[in-house]
Amino acid sequence: MVLFEAKRRAPMLAPNASPAERRKATWTARRERLWMGSVYTFSFIFIAMVTAEFVYTKNVSALSPATQVTFTNGKVSIPLSQVSDGDLHRFQAKENGTDVRFWLYQKPDGKIATVFDACEICGSVGFYKSANGVVCKNCAAPINPQSVGTSGGCNPIPLKATQTADAIIVEEADVAAGTRIFGQQ
Image (cartoon, rainbow, N blue to C red; front, side, top):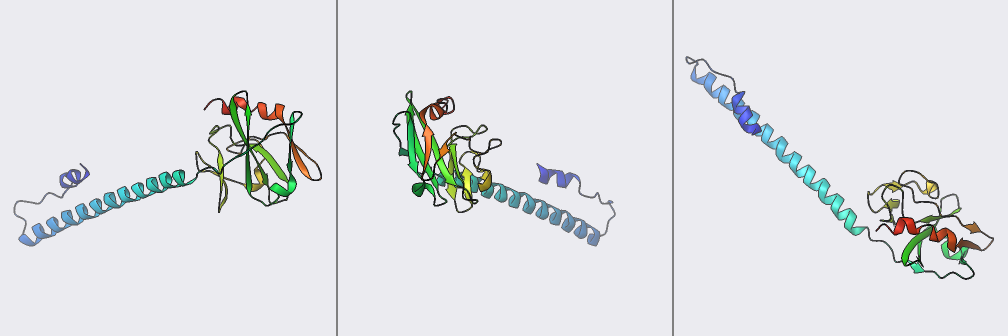
């Protein structure tokens, strides 16, 4: 359609135009069609490549397996030595028939963040760790490592936990509150 538009915009030649003027006008119109065709072809290729990269990244970003936790006296204790390596450590608990995922992550400042594997915007799709840091599986938004554990945006939803000298203690009631997020799947 756009190529036809170029023909419509081609300069009109006087009936008594010389052969040189006709050749010049023909070449100008051909050159404009070539440039327009090239722009549209490269635009299409660019859009296709961006789309393919997005789809590929989304498929490659599988969640790491979650470690099943069981609560004793309404609490679970996770040793600090197990989660103090700067990696994302995913856990899962079954609450009222719903699997609730959460993870612990040592931030660059050394503090341990305890969060649900979900955010307010994208829901319970989850997060994964890549070479660039923590990334949302749904929208591919990179998460500032220092902001993990704070609410807002596409940050993981904070989970209340207590840190002792050698462990992180998570209460079952706090994890059970996450069933509202994970029960929507």
